[in-house]
Amino acid sequence: MKNEVKKLKKKEIKIKSDVLVRSSLSVLFTSIFIVLFFVCGGLLYFYNVVIVDKFQGYDFQVHFIDVGQGDSILIKFPNEQTMLIDAGEEDEGETVTAYVNNFLKNEGLSYLDYLVLTHPDADHIGGAIEVLESIQVATVFRPKVYTPEEAADMSSENIMISTTQTYDRVISLVTEKGCNIIYNKQGIELNLGGCQVEFLSPASDYYSSTNSISAVIMMTYQTKKFLFTGDADATIENTLITQYGDYLKADVLKVAHHGSSSSSTEEFLQLVRPEYAVLCVAQNRDLPSVEVLNRLHDINSQILTTSSNGSIAVTIENDSVVYATAPVPTIDIALLISIYVLLLIFTWGIRKKEKPKRPKNVIRDNKENNSDI
Ligand SMILES: [Zn+2]
Image 1: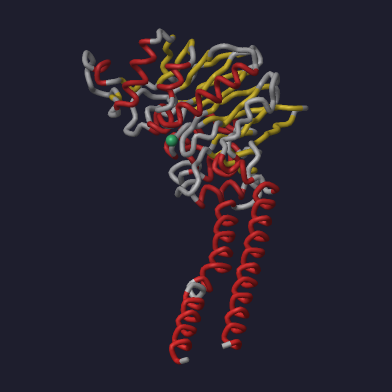
Image 2 (image 1 turned 30 degrees about the vertical axis):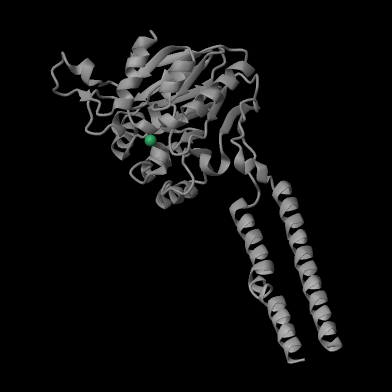
């Protein structure tokens, strides 16, 4: 009997020390997890850090706003005027509006001078609904793609008519807000405080695809050139090569169509040869294509993506192009959390199944032994 009690006590002590070891291990793992999480910037994983003020006060700034797979680029010119090229998908409208509003406030400005709608695709113009609702816009550059309402009195031959309600809503809002309207067209030139803004495309009013009517814009300030290509495809690139040749050389290229292989031909990239190639892409999508990335590597361009950098701000400093990005976690937070959870399961899970049975068996054995007595 005494032996049984001793055994029982020993087992109780063993179980207690076992729980103590597992608890200590859990505390250790949790401490390591918390330290790594904060040291590696884990909180950044959950917040869309904005970098509106990185180059505050600089006379020429270009901000590639992170809107996942879509385009939205905010530019401030030396004459204090501002331009937003595209505004991402409709559900990114709030992100873009917040970014633009923060930027305008930081720079002491109150409205957007220009909004460029490069072409009617939703990943470029959807967010413009929220922008137009919330921010005053003076002039809108729009594609010559008519809404069905606009096209009602026209001969439908050789004109492009929209097929999406999102685009129609944007256009009716542009009219409702009383913005000046200019149709995107090759040859449009603006001089905004010494920055030359030129529309290189579209050269025609009619194309068989909406991507082809994308506005392609070259900006030249001081000795640097920035080329914005919307979703222009290889056919348009070939036209640009024929029409502009070496003039296409640029320091910063907004890579066309989110790095799709239907754009960014070898010939085009060989002419542009940008120091920086910016790709507006989302995480875990099939773009940018490996072919385009390889072509950019071949011409030694530094690749910046909104998927890994978040929003990207670019300016010119001491005759060089410099950029800043939002801080991102230096560790894969999903991997860190997975390892932590696995360690906890390993520590508690496997033995835990045996734990409740043992004392019950011991008590039952004890009762059985008693009945024997
Ligand atoms: Zn697009």
